Image 1: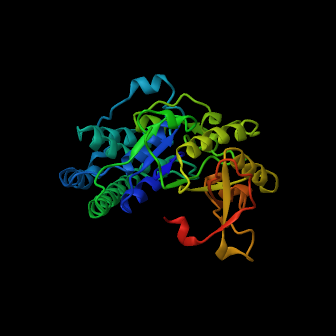
Image 2 (image 1 turned 45 degrees about the vertical axis):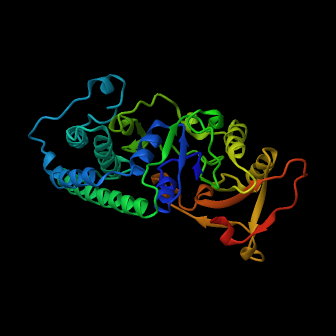
Image 3 (image 1 turned 120 degrees about the horizontal axis):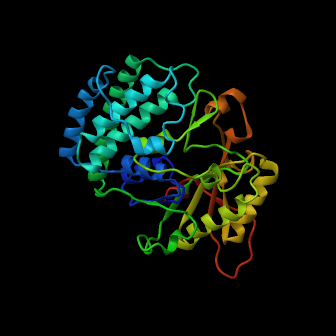
Length: 355
């Protein structure tokens, strides 16, 4: 399976759990970090060590003790908005959590520990109207660690049961042109399952909103990665979306390049203006040689596509309520035979979506 906009790595986890080999691609080093950790199949020995670490982790948060100050990241501005009198305690607790992750020693284990801290710090800081106490932070940190170890154990069990004991391949690079990357030149996925950035829906998942609209690059520091790029780098264009369709053509064109006649390509997308952008999106897919498939079970119920409403994806979505970006649609395509003109969308049964 291929996800050329892998994001948080859910598709990679599900692929491994269902016995599929998986490849993920993302331009964000933060997405590559999170998805790589989530899709790692740890050994039983590693999981036992992480389990013990998880029980001790809450006790590492003690404001009376020293924490590691990451000076290089501070010089680059990653501590921005964290030195305020209302947030310095959480900043120190995050540093202590990172120190506990580093103490694990092995790179794979440290990455897991950092991911635990990342999850907890996001809960504590991102889009919060009121900040949690250190006691609440400590409790969430321990619960997150325990839950994540449990999830990692379940993934290992599923992967071994299905005979796919290896982790997914995650590439940190642009999705455009990945088909010539020597690390994946021979892949021929049966299924492409992805959710690219949405046209006209400008959401920054790579930075947190601290104290209102103050952007923080802290997640990159926790992940031991560097940011340095503006929002347009991750969303295929500026807020006006002027570059979006050229970028999505290049990105999905690369996915089409590695597909064969039996590959099903499934995308979940939302639109700032579906009336105008959806037809243009479908036209772009046609230009790269894809034909749309509609679900026969939905004939007579809408347009033959799966739509869903997902309000509250981010804090400003909760404030605005039911926004255009909360209306998501599943688009299903396959490669069009060479030399044949585009046909009206064909029907596809639900069973064919899961080959």
